[in-house]
Length: 150
Image (cartoon, rainbow, N blue to C red; front, side, top):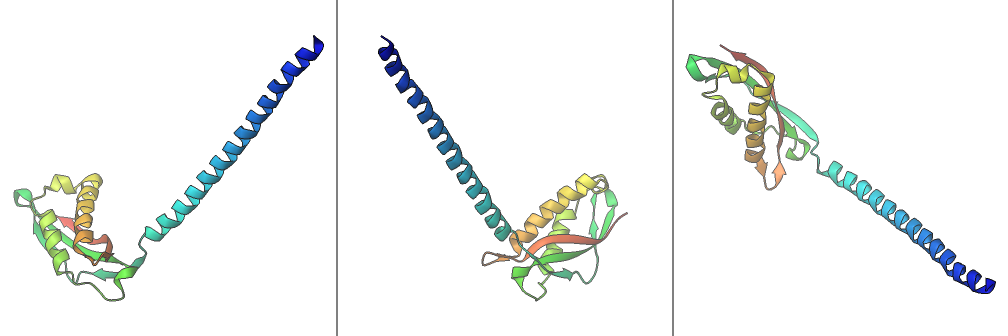
């Protein structure tokens, strides 16, 4: 009778040990896979981010008609990407985009930081789209050198 109990307990012990081994292997594989994912993802994210190139400043400020008889006097510069090369881009289209984006806006929209940031983000998206040539993004940011409402 004692021999039957010992033989019945022996398989339970080896099954428990086998489960522990499988769990350790699964954790090791999962950890290695997650580590590889984050390491590879970090490399591709860095490669995808554009690097700063030259800054092209608008030669003069522009005056835009706002709503209710107000005006905006605006100067800006374009931060180009390194991929765009060492030549300054033609800002003719940028002037037009700035005029289109700001014409008819209210002074109230432009008087808050949130309002200015929202309009700037919309303008930047248009600039990036316009100045992307053959899948090369030439523009990465816009800086305001003057911003006066009246």
